[in-house]
Length: 335
Image (cartoon, rainbow, N blue to C red; front, side, top):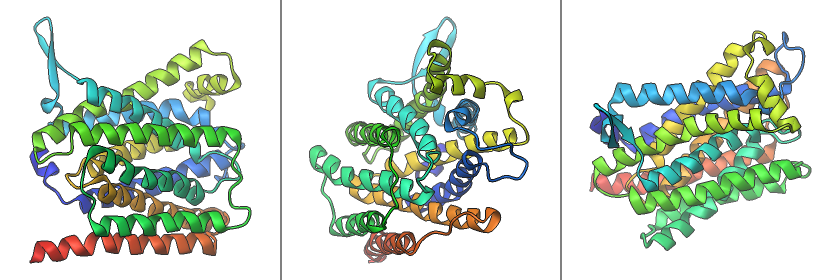
């Protein structure tokens, strides 16, 4: 089953990423904004993290077990038992993944920053990183990958052109900065250790990175909640108690499940054999389109602000980017 999964088209992974990202981003924004009628008020972003991260870690173990991908990881002996372990590259990449998981969820909870803008900001930053990583790694970047990246970047420019669309606080800037730095290191490690024609190497890297990412993010949240006395840590500690939530607790668990879905499909996209300047725009474009649709869902269901013309124009540029990324490879394959 693992090799069958690895042999699927990158566009199947893009669809899975898109399908998971819609409920993930919509629910995070709805709960942190207090949109549901039964809620007493908005839930701070820190309070959403503990249980959503716990479910993400559980979902990761279930996925690796059902698909059998965990068998490709390196092993170590603990008495009579052989257990999977990460090698150095995936270990470092998993640490970056843990940071990405937490900062992504927090990015959608900042007041005054819409889903689409936060998404365009983070995704646009990674789009700028992708060709730099390719050049540092000595990988050839094909012409349609450059065009797709430029259209995706244009979507970011359009989002910034909207007057009053940012509302970025210092905390939000730090959060997004950590997100981008983590992606830069992660892409560099993937290019060095995993981007090859060897499916076994890809599956091994994926398994070992996944074994670190979600569990580490949950462990770090626990440590910070118990060892720090800051207001942020107090909210984390409060979020550990299921009794502190009402009917929204089930939705927080669903956020964690969808978050892990984006981690699985997003990781499989980035581990594709193609250059980063091809894989990254597919990954980023899927989430941006999902963010626009999530904003529409919130508008219809809760009378939230509608996506502006600027954001819709950005989505149109993303669709154009996808066309440039998909049609030339399909024509080449047909020939």
